[in-house]
Image (tube, rainbow, N blue to C red; front, side, top):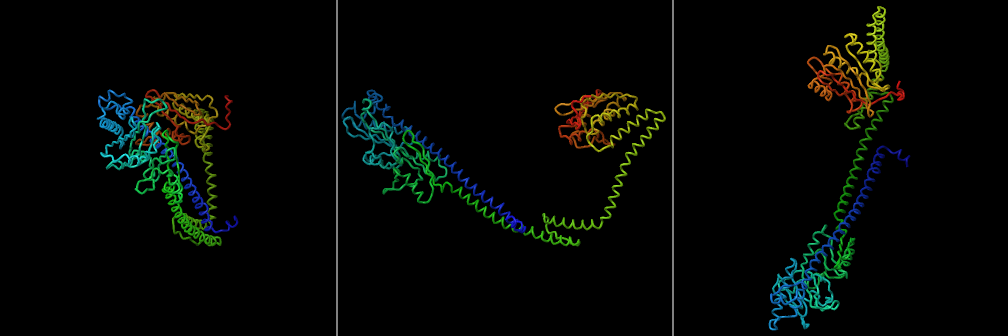
Length: 627
């Protein structure tokens, strides 16, 4: 395989590399990302709907808590006409109304109807979503009684129709808990056909012994279904999820409006179907769709929330994005293949032409030229090939001339080495002549000058031992004192700094400035001190003089100069303070912005120049040698 790949043309290698290293990883990566994205989205969706299911369960429980409180009103009812209220005990008020106690026989039915109507009306006003209130029970002689009230209707059609709608025959009259009846319509009221669910509670004679309560009647509260719809509207995400409220017997107490329920002959929805959830899952399976089912534990009323999601709908948007990504990937793949073929040919064809021209150059034909038809790398390569061909042709024609010029350059370099030696030898002759004439001072001055010249134009190295820089400063001050009769005093304090390296000529210009701008204006008398110290691997050298000093304006100009890009301070004749600026820039370029020169001065007191730089020691420095 390796041999086959090596024998392939550049065009085929380029195309195969694009496919293997470009398309295949991109395809696998896209498939991995899309599948992982669906898995993560499914997990997030499950968590989201689990929270929604628990919210529904707790909200339904909170809602039923309020109706549970309302359903206990028969035990707390204390309203009625004043004569009756005075005679009835508070917690036995409703039973006495039903039994007709303290009523005249001839007014019993009318008074009881009036009192029960007040009770039902009072109960109906306890909550805004109560459509109707019913009480069905018995009097003291066991005769059936029924009372009905609604703010939205004036005529009750009949007890038989009411009992049929709520399955009255199946109600457990011995239960002392809140009972939930499934959704139905209020067809038992004239002109009122609203969908409700009913909450019921049995009412017992509180005078009975514990465990042997006597049944008095049942209170029924018709609640609008929209009360449940409001709970589910706050947890609708995609609009395709189906919510169910199921009791502990598996019967569907409530289903969200988008659930497709089968209809009976009357056209009403059969929401009480026991296997509604199983039928919905089966319906999705018949369609070839996967269902996502989430449920919760039952609340204290025996109700649990169930959510069924059709994954085809839930993942529809995500799958559409994945399909769009595949389409874009396919288009990109096709475009990549076409462009790779195009650019491969455009890359290979000029190379073939260049190879043919190179064969002619190998045969000695330099009168050839490649066409330059573009400004890309191929065009540049063709132009460089033509330049190389011309340069090679010129090189061959001028090879002998080049050899002669090389010889001349070497000779010039040898002669340039004579000039410094000539200068040193000439100064030495002058010094020896002064000694012969017994002029020791001139001899010493010439020697000091010779040392400084040798230091300036000696080896081109930037770092020198600190001792050499101090020695040059001493020679410079010596020459000054020779002219002004020793009026300058120099003090150097450099304890334990033996072996430290500094940039060449980093201190001498500062000492020169101290004399020219500080001591000289004060008639040439003064002192210059150099102090050095090391802290945190940094070295600070302070050059102080007791000269004329600078005023605030001059000091400000100096500080601005150190921060600027100018080489010095320009006056009408020339540049000034070039040496100070040169030192500051050299230190910053060598070691960074944190190093350089800082000037402090007070007029008529003197000037202090601080040079800050890192500590650099020579290779042969011995920290234990303090001699």
